[in-house]
Image 1: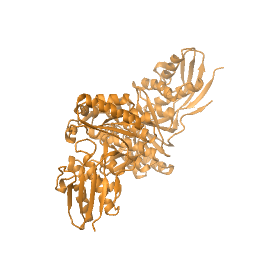
Image 2: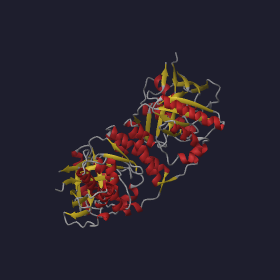
Image 3: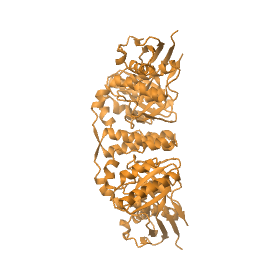
Image 4: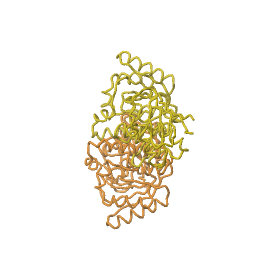
Length: 307
Length: 307
């Protein structure tokens, strides 16, 4: 009989303000839903559970490409059938492609008897990111697979570091506009001022120290981005006002989630995270822009799995 | 009767490879020696204990300028007499000016009954750095006053973070050539590639996490500088060979101390630090360049004070 597993790959927030391309965190909500079945039929079959138009060629699918890599490594008759319900919409900036890729890999690893290390799983999932954006980046797949907050110190070779953190609540708003990762990357300058880079690496060092020391004040002061945010935030209507009002409401700080358009704010507790949600809602209602809101926590446990 | 205190301000290593302008560490050796006396004569008198030519105008002296600032804040008849023995030579890259400035401030603070916070003491000491280099930087005075490893997340306002660290040995070589801080700064490019900056902030985040996790492997992998070292190391004869041979001898990593010409290497234990010393000695003997060597530990306790 074919074995089936259900996984709930969560959204992730890449960059974390001052950690462009190297930091990411795992959310509890939103999550996709995936059912993955191990077969003896050497192919990958991808089906959508919600009518969402997924690429049917597995090599062009963010869940399919990592599974093909796993099959190539196994070099036997193993195959997979995948049923995906996409709750995390592509282009939201919350790691939609990473969720599909990491979900497929974690499911496959469980089905195969946990034969791969977490680092190997990230390596496989990065093939999905390559399909989605042309670049094998790990700042979403790593937190999706490890849970919590992760640092990608290096890609070649992969060097992933879990950063311990105190309780953190996340308020997330997804304004219903599309920002393509490739566009968001294109508008960045290839060169930056050394003095800005120094400020940025002082901040990321402060953020890591603040997280590991449970020092909310230091975390808050370090959530500053002098390089990427000033350029990319122009693509996001209401960004400055959302940020300003969230800070007044007590948020520690926040910014663009991944390459946007979602905006996230971190808070010490649920009450503040809910107050931030209200401010975000008010801003986008006043602009008249449809939006989705989430209040959730940093997910230290990682992806939920059900047999 | 006038009160006198003796302090031994230690050398410091700024930058720590991937933390240009924001990281620094405090050494046990070398140290200057300063005797500071509290007087009722509203002036600062600076004397050299070893015939070293110090600027006699206190406003132009790295120890004098901070004391003048303290006196201005006190706004009474307090004055200071300072006797300095400079063991840390200016232009060595081991925080010579910071030692004089921090030594004067720590001595004054003790003489006045510990009325200043550590952060205030750093603020005063930065006036000494301004005299020395024209810039109010804190990456040497902060570790000299706090001890251990410090992050200067910001200067205005001052935001100093102590980074806990496991046992670390430091091997230091000071080749007898002079590199002026201002020259070493001038040759740096004002702009850097974004991709290099990303690598650098991945490394500093990794270094902070590695130090706080007592993860020597991560510390070692993170001790990489893709921005400053490739430019500045050209000013230091033997640099590449010292680095290569130190790593072979087991050093975790290292690089230019401050703006050079001193080169430092970190090791897990004394035996490795001594093996690194031998390699450094061999390299500079083969070049025929006079040099001084130190094997010491990161100084978690900070400056030694004697009444």
